[in-house]
View: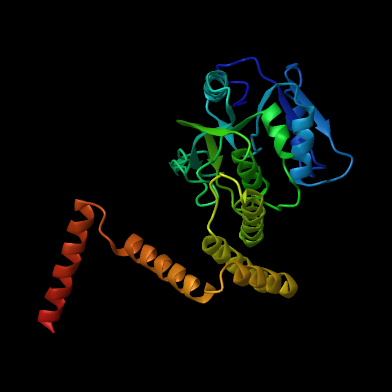
Length: 301
């Protein structure tokens, strides 16, 4: 319905059902009287990324975007993105700001998208969030979405798009991302695996960029990421992979122990600042009242 409500009307919506076991097909079929909407059904369950690859191959447009089934577009999303692609022909990937919402689509907070600072890269911080839209001809230069990166195919495609074309940021919330505990991106049992494959995608991008002018991680930064990958593998009882990532990490950075110590120290400082640093006059007032109460109780004892 959020697609049907778009101010820009020249669109197609393709839905592939990956052998769902609920009433998803019945819901989609209700809307098939609109010729712009197409429904396809897989004969067997092939997984999210392989289905995503199918979707891209079936699209007729030179520009496409992805919309997860539990999320919603704002009414001007397609109009804004189409205009951005028309005015930025050199940009292969154009993305927007988004809003975190609860399961009833009530806004919780603004998303984390932002323009990529000059000389930086999504390898250092994931600046590029939803709504992501692609020029097909540039997307095809990357090899496309890759099922290898379980739960991190979206990060991998961003890294690859960075390597072939400019990325453009639209500073406007066009996407409502619903935080659902059982969803792929928020399931606590899937998050460690997603984080691990995010690091693997980073390492592959790091290797591709060696000897180029494309912004990259330093050997030290990549070694820390590989060390974290090793720790995750040990938690997942993947000892062989854990040893492999440890070996790669030490080959990149023989002083890895000291690098990890500094990394952890900075993480602790960041957490302390986040939890204890007053951020407003209201916070200062609150801390002052607490201190007065503590002093009053001490005097009384």
